[in-house]
Length: 278
Ligand SMILES: NC(=O)c1ccc[n+]([C@@H]2O[C@H](COP(=O)([O-])OP(=O)(O)OC[C@H]3O[C@@H](n4cnc5c(N)ncnc54)[C@H](OP(=O)(O)O)[C@@H]3O)[C@@H](O)[C@H]2O)c1
Image 1 (cartoon, rainbow, N blue to C red):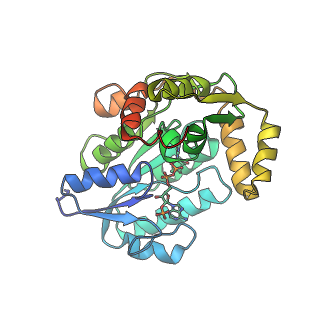
Image 2: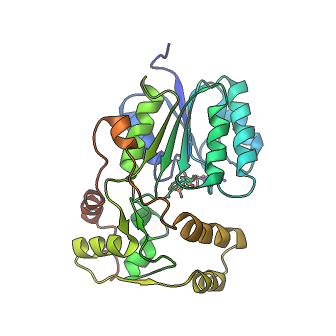
Image 3: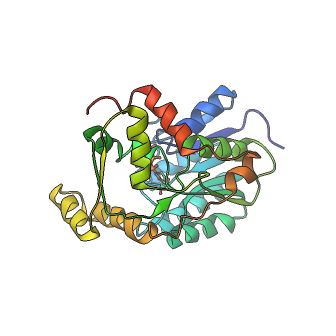
């Protein structure tokens, strides 16, 4: 039987979903421990010696992995972390997973066979990538160049993910559920950028280039090889249309439709984050 005092560990606590989950749990008066390299105790996926202190006394964990469940070695890390969570007395795991990634599904199986109560949030691309991540800069520059064509993606609002994660971490009814999470509408990147341009009253050009040219551009920026490989994997292998169909995870989990991309665009434009350059 859960009590109000059971502490919840939020990994990726400073990230797009984690930050929103922490805010909601704190507002509800729930004890929360932040999982972040800058937190105390610190949590670092690359330093297993930090995991014990982060897990000590924890009842439930929101598991958001870095950089992506598809990278080499991720499966072994998830297995090792899950084993340690079980040994530490954790009862519940909520995994943030990615849609259309075979490697992510293998990590899901680790959680599903852990013996713990689990909930899996298998998410499409986040709308917040346009305002809190790598897509912000091109939006500000007004020049958006990506190796994607007319593939439509049903962007999910990180607010919806956070709301579902909090429900799964604190309320009954989400045990052993896999929620496939998408927005209510699939948009191409060109259409998404157009919506942002219209709402902010700015010119933002979208250009599609080949994966080969995009790789060369990233190499010129001297990004690490593994980062380039991951980015190309996400834009080519995963973004091939397999994730265009809508899913009903938000409706199933919350009993209401998912927030639309236009709702995200209106809210975000009002913060001024897209108005700095032009
Ligand atoms: N973005 C999307 O569209 C999308 C879609 C589906 C699934 N996902 C999945 O969601 C997860 C989060 O990805 P995101 O890109 O959205 O990132 P994010 O959660 O916005 O930000 C990264 C978070 O991870 C933490 N972090 C970074 N390196 C870490 C490390 N070595 N050890 C511990 N924590 C670390 C950061 O905290 P500190 O810097 O404070 O340590 C920060 O809280 C990934 O597993 C990704 O595959 C993302």
